[in-house]
Image 1 (cartoon, rainbow, N blue to C red):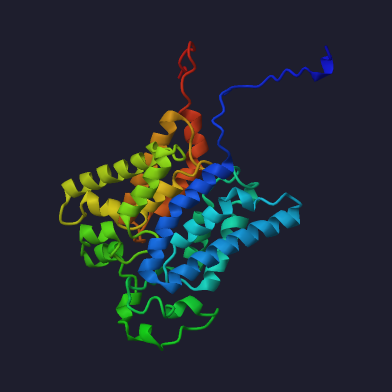
Image 2: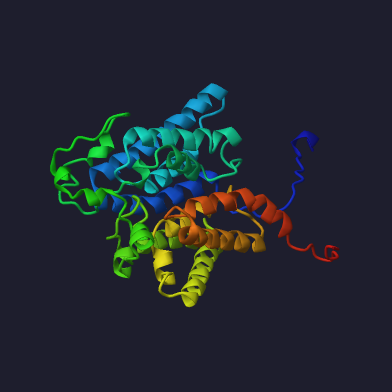
Length: 348
């Protein structure tokens, strides 16, 4: 017998391999995002289409550029940059200028991902890093909204879409006939916070309300999230914890003062809570892995989101809540480690 042909491999657990790669998981996330992206295009037309393309292409080019500069292999095939671009675009207003979208995409990859060492090493969700940057840099543009289902959305761009830096959009074409109030942040959360007017639940469920590109149809987001959960590409406990804690806190506040605080249904269906809970808080690289830790992490995000909405200066708080949860994820895992079988409990 030839001893050189005999190999003994010693490996740590787990020893059963499911057979899924990072590419397989990420590709399925892309598939789950495509219906939401398509619905955004149906709502807002050409501007939503070029917004999605610009954000995604910018993220892909930025990742490839840093691959080249660092001498690393091409990582575009893992689909992570594609997911970042799609999620980033879906969190932006459809009227967001394209040059600002390029800035957001570059920051999302460069600061949110590459700076930490690439996929799996990032501390924060890259798409939210890009959005947080443009939230601070371009506060007016990111709080300017266009009405959905405009009759000319497939023939004309929203004027702000193609605006160059330091320029104002032209006041010509069909969009100029729209009332200016349609471009001043009349989202359901803004109407509730500043005008104390609640949006009908049907509009929030079906996507008739004005919001960011991918935040309008709660039903579609839940269906796409259910696909990922059924394929076990997403930890269902995280969105359940986020939405459950947000609903509980909203219920308690409404119980205390019904005239001031909206009902839990409005809190869950408005803004970016649904998209954030399903597709961003569940990011495998930035969320806890311990069984109890994912519940604490999700509950933290839900509670902080409602507190910012109710008492903060901003109408929306889910972005900052998720980024805070990302920062605390390692600490949550540290204190929520399961007890080793046969070991004594921690002494205090």
